[in-house]
Image (cartoon, rainbow, N blue to C red):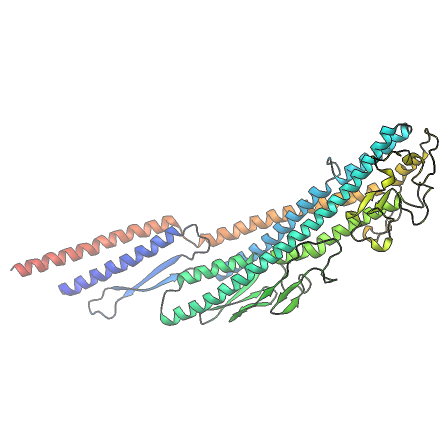
Length: 482
């Protein structure tokens, strides 16, 4: 081999060493970057040189489309269950468990205790006022829970609007990245950084909608939901949603008072048609329009049950049909046709409030003309008995099984607690699975030990090539000296 050939080979080796060092340093720098695809350098013999030498043929990006698909499904599932778990945790805090101080069940127990205490000494103004305090506290507990549910629906509505913004931004970015990747690939330019950015964007969108990504020969990708809805195919889909600043109990998608999702100008039922199920977006819609609404219906039904048990036809014979009983609908008699939102309007009858000068009406009747015997406790005992009487509920939301008012509230509290446990456990399981998938993806990612080992090998190769250059230089110097 000639000296010029040896020098050419050594110089090509130094160039390949420099490129390899750049690739390895990039790998090590991004070792903790989840969306970074590990780079590997491929070397081939330089066929253009008769003496040989080495040339960098390509730098490849390692990726596993199957594992990427599994990770995105896991992201969607974990996000959905996390949203559900947070909702049921908040709902349980508002309604409270059976044995929680300050829960709706506890407030009803305090009302029962106050009635028994007043019945033991019906002449005591203090004990009668304590019944007023307990009754208003119970009504306030229902109002607080109803207001809290409205707040949870408003929060879900706001999260939907935020998700729509993220989806629109992300899909627009994917469309731009597709164009940049196709152009760069056509021009023979490096596309690896663009691919990393595209994967990061896809992972962000996968939290809201489970994605199926199809690679095209051009280098672009098409994006669909797992159920088949097209989100990106050359051009990105456009999402639209109108956020509601305030949501009340009666406001639903069905009556048009709150917004549904629109995709490319077409109203899209979520979760109705099932094309967007599985991610956080569908979970927010489900909470706003189904789960929270059903919880509100049960609260309203319990409020109705309380109103009817303490209203006309019950223990208080001074009441006639059309009169407001112990509990009222915002101060008026309850109309069965206006059950929706009752839990947020239920109040204690003004005649029975603690601040009035007539607490004896607990003992003698709301519409009694005058005070009766101060030792008469029959009405107080009958009111207490009505709380525990098993009757068929007037609202279909409570089913058709006869239960007491106490039983209805205890069942609601138990169901809320059970749902919180179920979704919390499911969320933890989904998080554990997501971590397993991430670890599996990372196993084919950057291993810093291996990268450092490659760096040592490059160091040795660099030293060898540099030595060849030095020897050739010495030989040439000697020849020139001669």
